Length: 208
Ligand code: AP5
Image 1 (cartoon, rainbow, N blue to C red):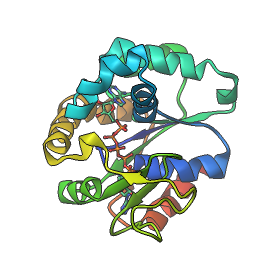
Image 2 (image 1 turned 180 degrees about the vertical axis):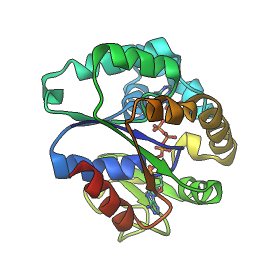
Image 3 (image 1 turned 90 degrees about the vertical axis):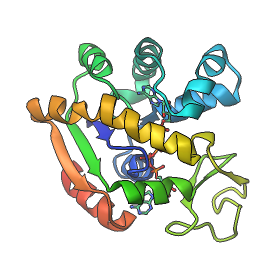
């Protein structure tokens, strides 16, 4: 199954992608994670995109599309994949349509106040990338990853100014994709404002 996870920052796309990946055994491809890995490794791409990502703007389409096209050309995507955070503009969606067909677009909806609560409380593991929330999905020991014992950190773009910018960018550039994919008959809405188990129960019904 080839699927796109659509939704505002903090909707829980990454959290659900990890569960879907385990359920369907297909790769989880997050453009945000690919960019953050490039920044961590100080590659040419990472140096180019760091400031853009920290302030919550979008990386230019040509860089993002090239990254995803290269990733989708790898053999592990033959049976399907989960695209998390891509496409984010109609330009990216048009480009994707040229190199891959899509089976379903899951659109996660959640209220703005809940998004801000989630992003301000998000913690990530520096070593394995596992995600937590200080209130709703806390680690057993504060600041330490349950899975690998790594240190938990706050993303630079989870500061309030950057969160607000990301929400504006989402409304201006990404939200139009809801009607784009509705017109293609691919959109399935999921109320993501509930507990992760409830959200995933709905997702499971959609993916069969
Ligand atoms: P990216 O990493 O994709 O960020 P995002 O879309 O802003 O999404 P987030 O990772 O913030 O949220 P999420 O929906 O995955 O939520 P999560 O599961 O983590 O992109 C970062 C940046 O990279 C962009 O701003 C842009 O600069 C660049 N970029 C990426 N893709 C691009 C593209 N295609 N084009 C151009 N630029 C691009 O959950 C959030 C928190 O809530 C966590 O703490 C989690 O534990 C908690 N949580 C999750 N679900 C629940 C729940 N049901 N109940 C309670 N808490 C929950």
